[in-house]
Image 1 (cartoon, rainbow, N blue to C red):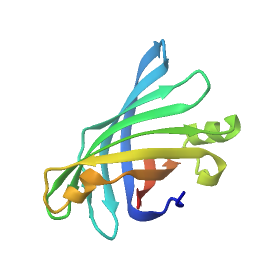
Image 2 (image 1 turned 120 degrees about the vertical axis):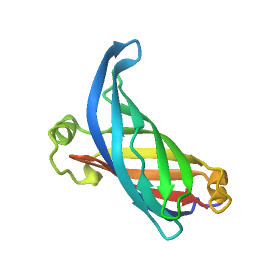
Image 3 (image 1 turned 90 degrees about the horizontal axis):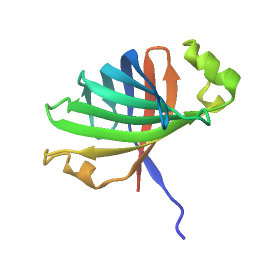
Length: 152
């Protein structure tokens, strides 16, 4: 089998607002966070994240944080791109406690990975409709930062 190769697509920074608890469901502790703003930049595209995206967070019984995110990206040349991703964040309890307190934690100390997908009507960025991506995350006090990689 061929080795999987990737290329950096962009770095995206999100500012997340207040997290609203929905309570315990049969699947875990559910919360919803609103994405207030953000930005993304890479060699092939850059722009801003529009307010109103959401992250349906699920803290599972095994202490894995499961993410289900929907965002709207606006490129520097006024094109709209829908970005969705699912992923996981987990690590040693002491590390997760530090993250939850808003402390700066080296991303190598915990697992934070997502699988982004894109949808757009833009002809210029239509190639995004046909790529698979993976991302590594870094949780900061005001929101996550992801390095998104296209799988070649």
